[in-house]
Amino acid sequence: MNEIPANQQSPRTLEQVYRPLNRRTFLKGGAATVAGMAGLVAALKPLLALEKGDLTLDDLLQKHYRELKPDELQRILKSLADKCEQERGVRPNLRDLKPLDGVEFGYALNLTRCVGCRRCAHACLKENNQSRDRWDDIEMSYIRVLEMNKGAINVETSNHYYAPETVPQKDKYYLPVQCHQCRQSPCTKVCPVQATWQEKDGVVVVDYNWCIGCRYCMAACPYDARRFNYKKPTIEKAAINPNQGYLSNRLRPKGVVEKCTFCLHRTREGKYPACLEVCPTGARVFGNLLDPDSEINYILNNKRVYVLKEEVGTLPRFYYFFDK
Image (cartoon, rainbow, N blue to C red; front, side, top):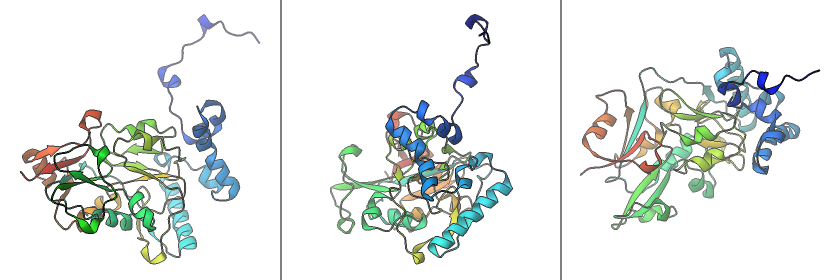
């Protein structure tokens, strides 16, 4: 068969050239298209999990969350609930809560009031069904509380491992850091399989059934706000929070990246995030950025507001402020 001369071939459109990968095409062409061994291992991980029996064929062939029809999603929710009940002895109330119309979530934190007690971090662990190992209490929490020298703003020289029973120190201040739900989120741009994206209410989510654990998003995040599950979460039956959301605090499998979602299984029902409710000093403020009368907008309009690493251009929805 004669080939068509190059000058007579129809040019490819930009959509064809830069068509984004999905998990199926990534796995299919992984050996030929992934640059470097780390990417290749991540691409083959679901196939290895299937061979070991950790993943079913239905799991492997599942559509992307945004492609699922309502009945398909309900089957997946039931399957996950069945698995949790079988493995953990607890049947969760697992739901898929959609973003609310006219809502864009924002968070603000008062650095004048924060005392570094880490109650927010531990409440986050409990709410989001994370490991209870002593090491994981610090490493896996979505909230890092950094002890800083007064007058300093260098996060890289802060102390993450201070003893919480010694706070507050008079020559220190405390900077909790979590996902900033960035408007220009670098983490979502680098995901090779589109397992993470930004919802219309501003929350950046992860489909844990779609994530291949390559950790590119972790490398891209300037706030160190994502956590990788190196092992199956260690959590006792009595400690499991049964109020779960598909895109938030459901029990995650080993080998995926997870993150803060502003407790969307709570906030999309009009509740506050768990970290805010336990703060003993009232340092945390959460609300709707699209509501001009919300508390979060009062803070942004009337307080001295500080944006962490503003120079990187992520345009976060998480702010810091001071009383004076």
